[in-house]
Image 1 (cartoon, helix red, strand yellow):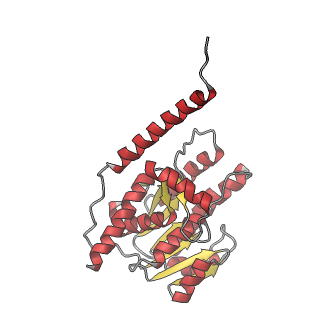
Image 2 (tube, rainbow, N blue to C red; image 1 turned 180 degrees about the horizontal axis):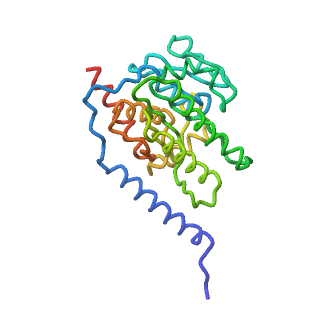
Length: 277
């Protein structure tokens, strides 16, 4: 009996993968579910605050915010400066505040009370991190913040935009997935019956900004992007701003996956382009 050659054994699964990949990419490219341009006056968010601007996602949010003509002042609350933050400070659009204790916000009441919207990108990898520490950073930090923010803000409508993750479940065997769900539910529950709306963003792979990306990250992004499983950090920021501008169109507890993030980022670009004409 003659057995298949090794090359044939290797080729078949690769060929099947290629077919599935190409089919998925073509199907996504042919989708026509773009979001109509928002033509009503944008809800006000002239003053914002960004937490985690020194990280991958936060750097993209800050980059988008610096280019956003609807935003006049950006409070960056951070443990360290970055070239992007310093660029914003030099331009006069960013007010940087060094802050170390993310369980205590008493020292930054003035900054957070000034914000119409907050974009939260603080997070760490779960690799080598115990569940308690991961929970403190991903659940306790933002939960303590929204409690403090709502106690000092006198604005009638404020929104908190939280970067979560895709493929999360309270029944997951992965600690990080359970903790991200716990974070979302804690924040959503707190915001009920208050002047606060919490929106969660659930991206798959996040591609860094052009200035921060290395070749390996670029390869991963361009591999996953055709399947709608990757989004640029800057796109997350644009989607957040579009969601903020649309105001009550979004309710407390809404969640946006990767494809929704891409669509609202595109809607943001088209709205601002239209406004310039």
